[in-house]
Image 1 (cartoon, one colour):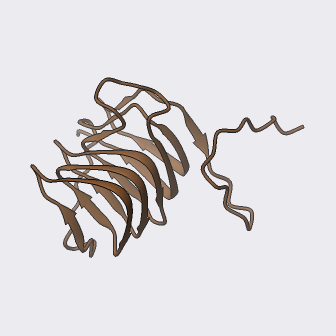
Image 2: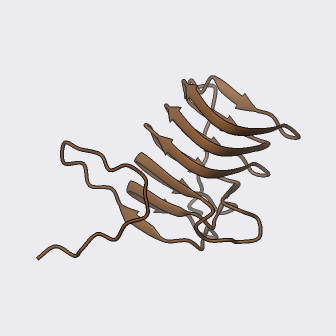
Length: 142
């Protein structure tokens, strides 16, 4: 039995899509989730789920209120670290085809066999306040 990730964006009620061959860049906000089959870059806010399809790329400063499903690429293709930061208030699922060169901050992380996690991961602690994406070091708890 192989451990695979299978999803249906329509059944998941993801209403926004950036099609293959399309590119969006800038300060972007999406209500109802986002399916990325093309390229999206910038300061991105997503109310709902984020799905990056195989062949799709998202990079920049990204905040997602729901779960994130990575079949494509998070971060720059050249592997530049600090190019991308993703704050996911749910679970990040990285499929066998998924590649992340960005920094991940999420409540949970699920890696599938073959997933390529190159950037750092930190656990998002929900304690009544949510951190804002910024470069900072958190001292270890005593």
